[in-house]
Figure 1 (cartoon, rainbow, N blue to C red):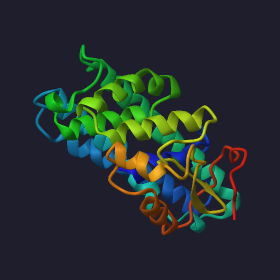
Figure 2: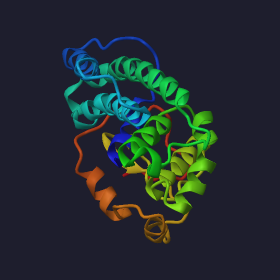
Figure 3: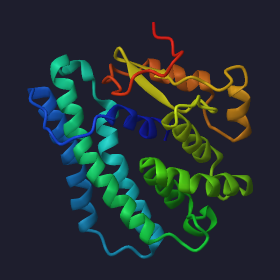
Figure 4: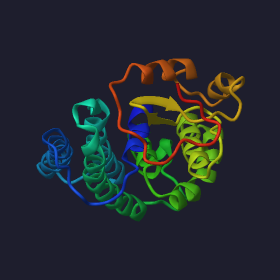
Length: 239
């Protein structure tokens, strides 16, 4: 899901300091509890039947803390405590992401990606999310494979587009498909577009499920978000 992928833009502040405010500490605790709950539940299940089932379970771990952060109203945390809350959350999420990626890469098949026809759509989606949340070098490693497989239908075009946009933003370039948003002044805003006049066509061409207008409206309706730690890119207009 787009929202789950974009929630990590709010987790850019790295470090290990814990939150100091009551609300911030409660958020950090809720993020940890979300992972603990999934791990406990998975521990009660039979051993995975195959790699596809293992990947789906890793995907649950990837999404659990992000669901907590996405739903949270950051205006509840005093402004002076938000950086500490972000660092506390990021420390938990980063450690979990690293463990998920390590396990995923151990299962990487000779084809170089987890084909939808072989692993099923749920595992293919989970694999994408884990790599989407990985470091930039890992994203760059897999983007050419995703681009090639998207043309054959083995990878959802929406996944390829999201990875492409995320890499572009990390490299300081405009995004092509309008999948990446950042938080400024408590509001989610899209990163600059490569071609605003063509973005809807580009999204249709790769099979994205929402129009850019729809996803922008969705983000406008979200609760207040925490400030993205990196400065807005040159030319980005803020109201």
